[in-house]
Image 1 (spheres, one colour):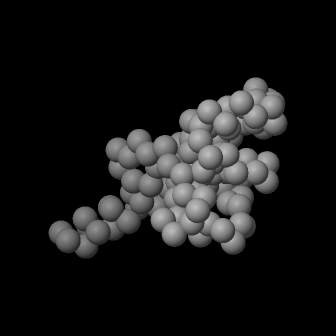
Image 2 (cartoon, one colour):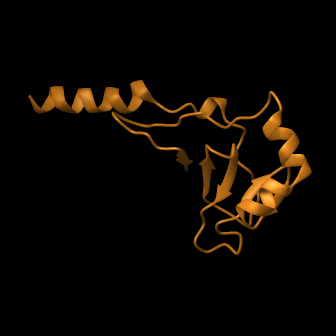
Length: 104
């Protein structure tokens, strides 16, 4: 029975999977080693505890230190209103997961 449960859980994690293939690539900035996907805003956010960029949003090669500065950016507004906007991509990784964050 344990084998069936393990197989079912493994399938659930793989079968539901993430839609990370639909996300833009993670930034490769050496100032942050831990990126989370913010589904509502459709951008990456730095979640590296040792980085001075912790909690900052990243879009178009720029860091935004808070949500308001991101939302005021004309480049971000254009992206959010355009067809290339990647918000709304669910990145769940298991049964019943409603997570809106993708980390790695």
